Image 1 (cartoon, rainbow, N blue to C red):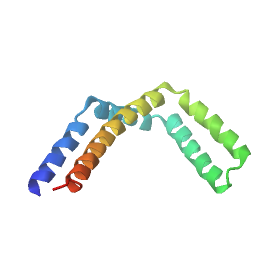
Image 2: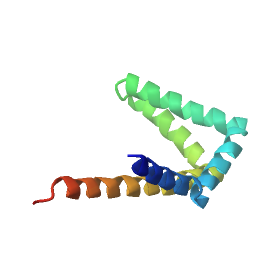
Image 3: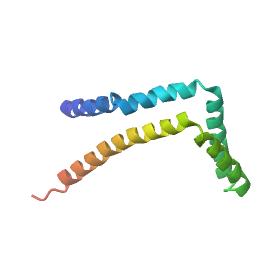
Length: 110
């Protein structure tokens, strides 16, 4: 079991040391230091909550869409989303590979 944990640690380290992950952290730090951006992100989150609680009120949806457009117009936010997607793809690849491996292992016909 120790060998398994060591291998998993290596995979995690590989992802954490990837340029995509490091860039994602760096951008997140920059975004966190921008008060206007943080406020806009929080505003979008609040509108998302309101929209769901309102049972999908179209007026709130308009406000949410407008806030999302405003947020998506900020270049650093888009770069962050791209890097985050790349990191999530790496994690998904590992997860999918493990699922395939265990599925083949457990369903192997003897």
